[in-house]
Length: 185
Length: 299
Image 1: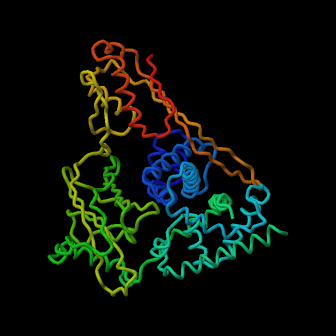
Image 2: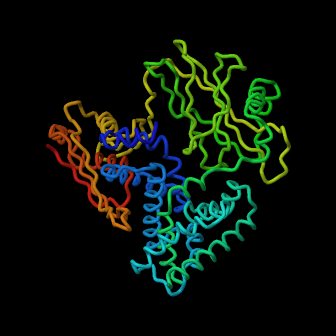
Image 3: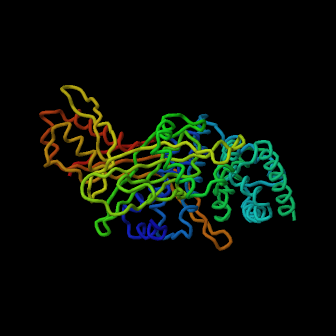
């Protein structure tokens, strides 16, 4: 079913909205959740919560691209579950490695608790991605948006693991340099 | 550097432009596949399915493990166009992702009119519409196709492995019910025990299964089930754009409302046991952890 028709179902408050969303995007959302949580039950919970949240916020929101709208919701919800889980001293998995790698990207003078710096970082991220080459950008997003493992990135891109490691390292340094330049102005 | 900062950066990366997210997903076709044209590949796979060689190959496991054979998720016949619609979603949890999804074939038609390879959509599902089906049973054959091993030098023309499911579907205008095994708790003498039944996974059918197992009549009705939680979504204006900040639920509350006729069964079955069996069934169905309160209301 076309995305606009699915969104119409939400506006009509028809329960088929969830059914159609699940049919079209259920597996996509599950793969995002599983990448963050590495746990089947938690990933299923995250996807269920996504449907529930989508139901609550559509309307009034009318997503322009339903897939990425839902994907972002799932990613956010999964991160909340991950934080709750790590507070309970459970879990770990690939995503803790992904987050550890991002340590290298934030200049020491920056605090992401500061609202001003947070806004500037968000602006810089899109601009940073626009400056990367196609392969570099794709690999960066697969690793740090989708939370994919190195093996999964190899399968998707056809690029060897050692090259991916090198490209991601260079991208993280570039991001740090960009943030240092833009935030310290 | 604090891990909290990197978690927040990971969070912020979630809000990048949609186009970067969509572009990253597009998969690169392995070298082995590009060497075959779509029509050529279809012919290869069709020959594989129907030839003696193909029948031998079907039983062999591939180095990229094959998914389990699963039937299509839904098969339905459109009442207006009289066309059969098919959605197939192979179980990919434990296997490598598919590069091509499947060939949909219909054994009523000769090989040379079969559908071309159909790529999956972004959700990994393949939807196909088949020509008008005659009344009665038809046989639909689906095949999953996998890439040649991309980590070794791919041999041009090497036929990929396939797995095949052959299913028979009745001539019906209704979508088949998607029933699942669920636990229903019921009163047996002085205790509450569970049984596995198949039911559609919704409150109405689960409640009906609970009544059936407890021998409760149609006069007792489920009036409603309400589940609320303490999640919240705040909208922050950021540079003219509204950004949602979501806090996931940590507590859930469930209220089940049943018609007052349930009281007629208190003497014969025991009020506490009956309540316990219903609570366990409804909580089990809801599958919610962090359930803080459950309440049964009779009205």
